[in-house]
Image (cartoon, rainbow, N blue to C red; front, top):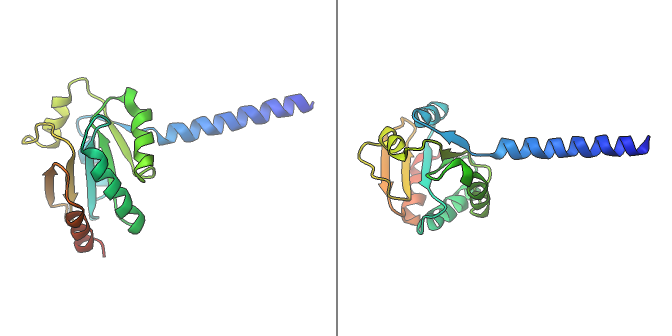
Amino acid sequence: MRGIARLLAALLLGGLAWAVQAAEDPRPFVVGSLKEIQAQYAGKPLIVAFWSVGCTHCPTELKTLGALKRRHPGLNVVLVAADTPDDAPQTRRLAAQYGLAKAPQWVFADPIPERLRMDIDRRWYGELPRTHFYDAEHRLEAVSGVVPEARLRQWVAANLR
């Protein structure tokens, strides 16, 4: 009887671990996903950070965003990896390493990433990092390249109340 109880306990714990892991997987980012993210944060300041595991300059910005998120828990940060769903374990691990494990995570899920970039911003050619700042009225400021830490802090000070 003890063996059966242990087996059931192991299965239950394994199932819980799988459920937690699955809940943390980045969501598939498809045409329309940005509108979904914007709607979820309507009326709230928001930073959407587009990045990639292979991006040389992305870690600098993600580390800064992670530090800001720790100092300002109310800061809304959403990560969108311009990678593939197969890269989800690596994107999840890197986000955690940068202090953004709890930030909502998405990963490009269209075999033609140009479609996604066109849906995000017709003037964006895919350079990374790409950061979208939305104030409470969701006016957009889009920045390609690493945003200096002082500029990120300035935006947080102006938009978090």
